[in-house]
Length: 236
Image (cartoon, rainbow, N blue to C red; front, side, top):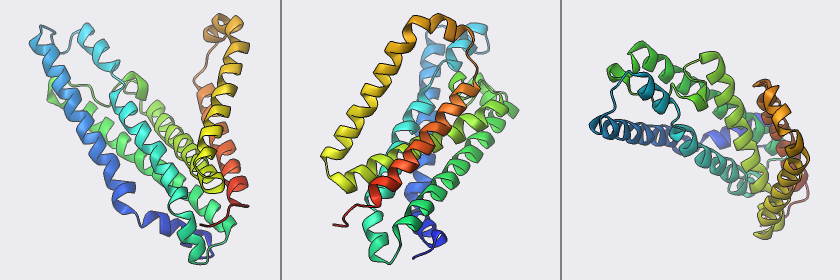
């Protein structure tokens, strides 16, 4: 258990929660999205029209439903696994590196799943009935070149951020996540206060790659934070 590969395999042993539960959530959200679309159809909306497409693509349900679970997945990957891994002989460095490798694997897995589902949706004319589930604005509006980085980098940022919160809980107990959450909230609010006067100019020159840099920054900061918290954590 002292190697990076061993600790990564330890994380991957949680097969259902890692690989199956995201599919369950995706299926449930897809069903709900279809039911909502049927409701609008019964209310008079016409599938395939510009209004229908615009409204369908503005539905962020698939991303919102998975975001919370992916964050939780990151939390439990540290909070529940770290004590067991050390008890099995893992070093702290190997654990943190293995956990980071696990986040990359899970992010890549989710990206492949979403890319495949989008391709099927496009190939079938949106499930043969103009139902938009994965061809939505929050996932790149049907553009695979946008969906892939959105899903991969978004998942990576959420998993690593969750891992940092799990690590601060292991290190400082229940008060740790509260303090960390408050610190993050204050930092975000302070940043918004600084940029608000220039908001119009910033939005005018906004580029999507800014979000990619932000996601990578979150992942890097969270990974460093996880290591710093766990290197001195007491295994209970």
